[in-house]
Structure formats: structure tokens, C-alpha cells
Length: 244
Ligand code: SF4
Image (cartoon, rainbow, N blue to C red):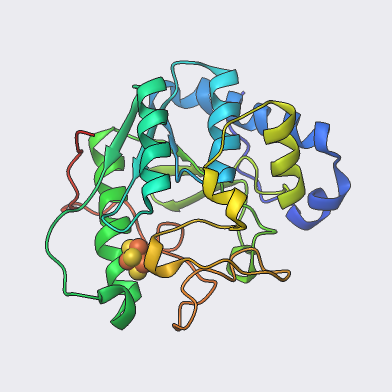
């Protein structure tokens, strides 16, 4: 069955479905998209807890599903080590990074530009080089103020489907899945982080907003790096695949 593109009432699903129903729905979304897009379906793995769930779900649908990771020169060592273990176990994962020079402390003076160079551009490159027709993300609508306006199936870029199969999951359900299915996660969560990014832009934060620890002290606080909000089908992206 082709992937259903009709708009759904996301909010009613968040509280209307229980954990098991959400897992089944997520698997079905990935299964339908995989049937339609085959090898053109690729998981964008951010190495965070949500991506760990999506990656595990995708592997349950088909072990052959490929993934990509966008890393930066500012990722914490724990995240880099976690990425290395992931790629060792799943060599069908490719890593993209932009190592071009950027101004010192650009993350402090202009974080949007920094994220654009180090995250958005390598994501564009990954999509182009891997022939991605459908990318799968771990985005969730309960994660913060910037994430309420998404659908499970979207086509923000013409010719590039975006699948958000765990969009309706609560943070609790993410941890429930990781515990029940014994999925390994980045050890930084043990320190108290709830959302992980680059070292200079990530702090431990409490409160209702899960992403409140991201870009603290800048206009981007609790916001987005741009991969979910900027066009991705643009030629000329940089950030060549790297060897670990
Ligand atoms: S999260 Fe911070 S360091 Fe990383 S790319 Fe964005 S602004 Fe730069």
C-alpha cells in the first residue's frame, strides 16, 4: 500500500493511542514507505534517543535499510564513540561531515550560520549522494515548541518524502521502547541530558521543554538546527563522506 499522505489529526493520536499501538503504527509507516521506496528509503540518524528508536524500528522492517549520520567537529567525545560503535555494527550507515574552515566561535556569534554549514549542508549532501527519495527521522511533536507543526508524512521538498514515524510518541514512550527492546543509547543521557547536540550548544536542562538545553543564551534557544525547516533538495551542498 502506498504511504498515506493525507493530513492527520496528530494531537488526537498523541493521547488516543497507547504505547503498543504507537509502536505498531510506526512500524506500519516504515513498512509502507519501504515497500514504496525500497533502497531509496534512508534513516537520518542523529545518534539521539529518538533516532535509536527509529533505527531499531527500521531494522525490524528490513535489516537492509541504510542510514546516514551528520556529525560535526563539535560533537562530544561520547557521541563520537557512540557513532563509531554504531557504524561498526551497521556498516550500511554513512557518515557526513563538513570540515571546511568557519569563523572561530561561529556557534556563539551566528549559530544559524554555524548549523547551516555544519549540519544542513552535509544533510543535503547525504540526500544527494545516497539517492534518498524518502528520509526517515526521529522528530516528535511533543519534544518542544518548535516541533508542534509537523505531520508523520510530509513532502516539504518536491520529490523528497519525509517520514516522521514516531512523531506522536511521548518522551516517556521513547524510553519505554529503549528499555523494553534493550536498545543501546548514548551514555550522556546518564549525566542528565535530555536532548543531545554539539558540545558548545548543549546543556542539561529541566522543565517541560525537552529541548530547552539546546542553544541556551542565544536567539536559537530550544530551537532547530535547520534540517527540519530548511530546503534539503539544493545542489551544491558540502560535507563529504568521511572515514572514521
Ligand atoms: S549545534 Fe552549535 S556547534 Fe553544532 S553546528 Fe549548530 S551552532 Fe554549530
